[in-house]
Length: 305
Image: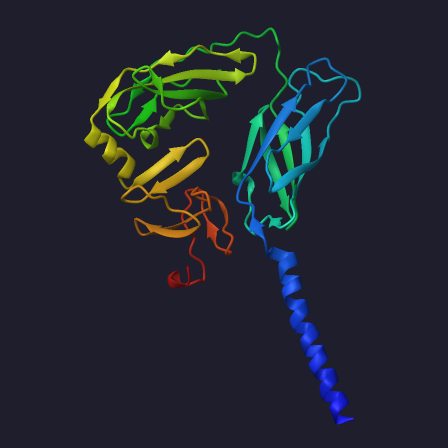
């Protein structure tokens, strides 16, 4: 009887030991999804009675499983209406959405819209998106860009804000040779320093974009001549860099902060696996950061970070 008792106890312990890793794997093992890019194509028009919208994703880590327009009108769409979408994105096998995954990790491409809410599960996220107002097709728009210039010697290009523009496209040239393809930005400046790796005379080009049918003409900046030594300093200096996808921090020598915490000017910041700073969210290891990305101290000790 004693032998049977000990054997039963041993078997129970063995089963428990085997089952625990299985439960842990189902919760968080695999490859975490750091960022999501969704491509929205809306064919909804003023006066239309249907709600044709597609949302797609080009990733091996996740896919769009459903998209629903939640406020389809009873009769027809009117000028000023804002279509609302509910989109579900599912993680692929051996990928998951980590704790702290937030709206600022999602990029919307194509038809313009705003993410209003996000619900996360380990294997999926549900996103609510409000598209921009339906416009009057006969309205006139001023899409002229002017005032393109270099902001000192930092490698930052600036231009005057175009009131009717929703976004801008920029390109960098060294002489007549393109250095970058078109980059989409949402304010009136862009840091080109990360692309200036050699000496030469540089210009950047900008055009404003309202939608696919309202695009301004390319406007060229004044030229800026950079020596080899200055170019080397630009790509190796230690500083913050704002990109189209968010803020990054370049360390002295040219490497970037990524995949964890870094102390910068006496404040802690968290960077994802692609090197982008998280802001106004909870980090994967459970800490709150504010809108500037800085850690908000709570009851935790600094050395615990």
